[in-house]
Image (cartoon, rainbow, N blue to C red; front, side, top):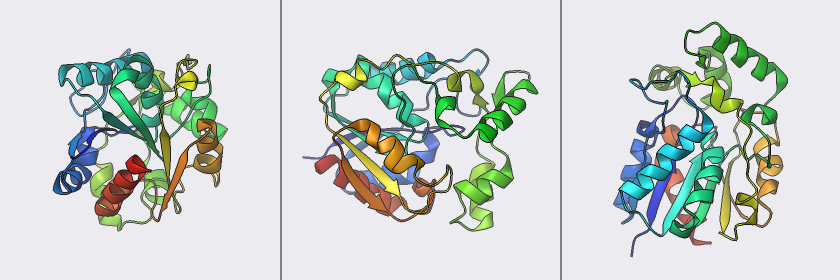
Length: 241
């Protein structure tokens, strides 16, 4: 019997980022869902969106779709959303899979895990916007997020990105329930990921999971675009260990 995957996107993305991976998972006999969280996507209202809103939108989606026995997959910023979602619907989750994801300790915010120069740049961009949002500059995207793709492919994805509500990066999270849950967890580490300094995702972030299964693959930060078939295989592998 196939599994049920709920794929949580990262900053600037929407559920559209998982389209190719969803097709690959369906082709392998599984069900896959890729909701867009609150404040994300091209037509979204972003002003005042908080991390709690992001979590709540995914919890509502799981409820509305009546999903059970879910493998919850979080990419990048989406890892912090997985941490929040599982605290509210733990009875519906069979495993958590983190794809080069941010993982916060109790009481931290997203910006606590990022380099200070990156935080400063993002805050400057947000302060200059009318909705307290920021969009990753092309140069950073090209050099650090999709450096393993052709320039035309990287640009085509970058042009689909939407500004990120900056408040979601500042909100401190209460994660005491997350760290008490016995739900199995896996971490997929992309060996050529340059979005953060070496060692940031693994072992720094991954080690916060306590006991976990490590799955490795080649590729940069945006493997859902550059290696969708391989990523689908790794997600299935991560859900089965």
